[in-house]
Length: 370
Ligand SMILES: [Fe+2]
Image (cartoon, protein in one colour):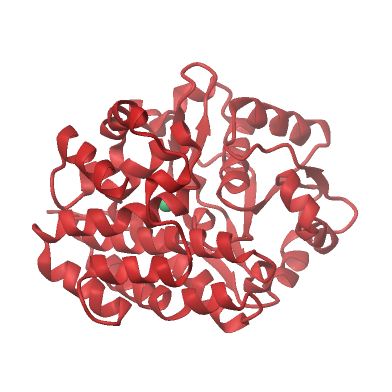
């Protein structure tokens, strides 16, 4: 068996790393900052603009779930101002939008042509402007991932654009930027980071290097997430959570699992925050998976600490950081189940789950989490 591995390229990591943007961007003529209005309101987008200097142009038109219209507007701004560098700032949405804008600047077919589900990745070439990714919450790991998710006009579906060429040229991971993140969002994005490490570790793909990274990522979440939630100004906890997020996204080149297949429709159908959806589902999916991979689940329980099964350890962590533990608490109704199951069955993440899950299994998991 021949396996293909790729690891993230260049990362500047640590409190104060944002300052390195100035020197990096000095060789470019005009950077386009891609972000959303929320980031502008917090002042973080302005901090990035200050590091880039007066030549930088701000595009803050990214919606919480990026749409094709957002991408076209970003491309128009890039062209109008003669930009030559893209600087994505924020959570998964602005970073994904920045990647898609980067693609669309030089790849002029309709975006649906690049849909990973239909082999569109083969049309994606290295010919794109350079990109810097600056994550502000810790969780998605989009700064070191090779994919972008955009809702397209033609199918009104979250569509994955994937290519090694989409990995940002440079990721600047500055935990000081996460100090102002409120406790609820810290908790939810932290559980997303946990879910990436945990599902990657349980994926059956052969990748011992990613396994080692994932286990350490799980250990860091077990040790530092509660601290980061309780005291947002704890820079060590913030740093370790940012690292755990990076590690999760590095490890999930092995694939994810059923938790993500169940979580994606919860966001698109019921508007549940992605990290919160993962947090609610994980204990149930772990019980389901433990039948097939008991030793790996035990290793997860040990990495999280505190004794008991992996399912119990994750449930305990959910309670400690005060996240909801039932789908019925976050706006999901039983009437949504058929639609949720249908969409979850179409989601590719479940193909790397260690235990095969049928539509009945997925329904059962939603019911357990309800
Ligand atoms: Fe995720």
